[in-house]
Image (tube, rainbow, N blue to C red; front, top):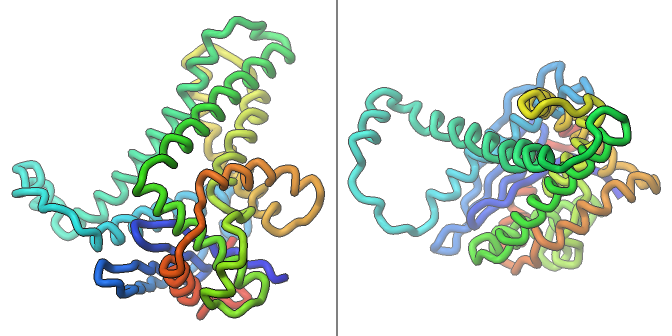
Length: 307
C-alpha cells in the first residue's frame, strides 16, 4: 500500500484536491457536466521542511485555497437574484476594483478563524473560569484545563451534530466521503474507476475532521503547561499558543497517516469515529467528481510529498 499526502475538501456540488504542485477543483454543474479547474501552486519555501512551522503555514495556505474553491463552487449553484447592488457594494467595487473578490476571500478566512477561535478556544476557557478549583497546584491547573477541554469538545461535537442534520450539509458530507474513498483507492494501487472507489471506506486518518479533534486534545496538554492565570491572561495565552497547537496537531496527523504503530492507531481512533458524522456514502456521480479531481493532481504529483 502506497501513501500519498494529497488532501481534499468537499465543496458545493464538488471537490477540491490539493497536491504538492497543483490544486484541482471539480464541480458538477446543474446540466450534469463536470467542470475541472486546475491551478499551479507556487513553489514551497524552506518552511516546508521545518516541523511545526510547516504545519502552521500549511494550514493557513490551505484555508485560503479552500475558501477560493468554495466561492468558485458557489458560482455554479442556481440561486435567486440577490437584487440590485447596494451603495456599500458599489463603494467597495470602486475602491478595490478587480481585487474585490480576493479581498472578500481573505476577509472570509479571517472571519472564519475569528469565529472558530472565539467559539472553540476562548468560550470554553471563559466558561471553565467559573468552575471552582485550585488554580495554583499542578493537579488544580490540570483539572481546570481538562474541564475546559471537555467543554471545548462538547461544543465541537454539538456543532457537528447540528450541522449534520442540514440537508445541504449532508450532500457536502457525501462529497467528503467520495474524497476519502478515491484517495483510499489510489493508495491501495487500484485503478480509479467508480466500481473500485465505491468499495473503500469513507473514513481516512488524514481527514480535516481528525485534525480538528487533535487540536482539541493537544490544546488541553499545551494550555496545561502554561498554567492557569487571570481570565484575560488566559485568553491572551491561548491566542498566542494557537499556532503552536495547530503545528503540533499537524505533525501528529501526518504521522498518524503514515504509521501503523499501536499508539498511532489509538491517537487517530477518535478522529476516525467522528467521521461517522462528517462523511456519508456518496452516489456514483459524486464519486465521478472525486475521481476527476484526484486525477488532476496525480498528473504532476507522482513521487512528491505534499507536507
